[in-house]
Image (cartoon, rainbow, N blue to C red; front, side, top):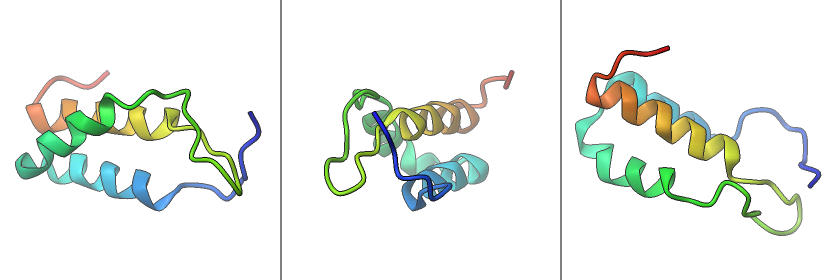
Length: 70
């Protein structure tokens, strides 16, 4: 699937920032995002997969829970 190459998306930056802040209030939302099917597409017009957003949520959850990074 081709994606429109515009760099980092706003939703990914927000999820990343929640991880950086280790924002406890965001855990349920991050868990919901981490369960998205990474193969699904956002649809027209640019057809973007959710893989990078799901990965960002998984990383943010690890930071928020205090798990070691690596």
